[in-house]
Length: 77
Image (cartoon, rainbow, N blue to C red):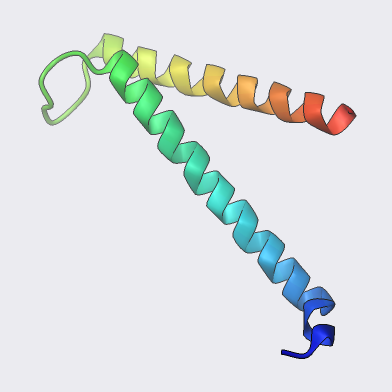
């Protein structure tokens, strides 16, 4: 492989975009796993109970806030 290919700005942008997608998918999987285990306590039906829906919403929001705070702290260093 020609080394100049690795310095191609379009290729770098594509790789970064794919890396971002992969990290987003990983984050969603973690969020789903954590919040599902914490919030869904009853049998699976056609909809969530009011308390499950509220818990899932709050869990997702807190998870996102903590993730953003963590990322900001690392970028500040």
